[in-house]
Length: 169
Image (cartoon, rainbow, N blue to C red):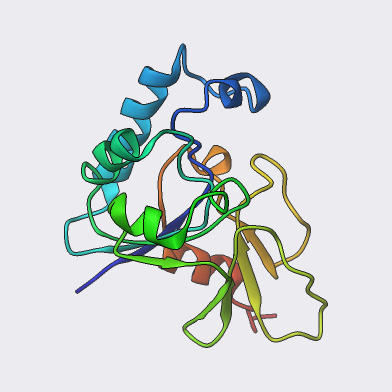
C-alpha cells in the first residue's frame, strides 16, 4: 500500500535560511545530508510525496542530484521561490509531477505553498508551507514547512488525525 506524505520549504542550497529560521545545521552541506536522510528514513520507494514548494535554490544539475537521492514519487506544488523556473525545469530536475497552482487532494484538503484564505464555514483544510516555524490558529490550517516537523515528511494520516473533529463529549 502506498503511503502519502507532505512537506515544504527545504530550501536546499540556501545558506541564509540556516540563520533566518535558526536551523540546527553548521552549513548547507550538513543541512542537505540531514534532510535527505530524514526524508528517506520515512519515505519508501513506492510512496508518494507532495512537496509544497521552495525546494531548491541550486542549479539544475545540483537540484537533480538531490531529487534522485530522495525516495518516492515526488509531486511538486511550486512555491514562491520555485516560480522563477519553469514547470519543465522542475520535471527535468526529477520531479514526477509539477503543479503551478494549488490542488484539492482527497476531496477535502487544499494543498498549496502559501496559506489560502479560509473561514470556519469552508469545508476544507489547507495544508501549506511558506510560513516556516509560524502557525495559523485553528484546525483548518496545517503548516508542513520542514521546521515544525523536524525536517521530516509528514504522513498524511497524521494530518487527518490532527484535523478530525471528535464527536465525543
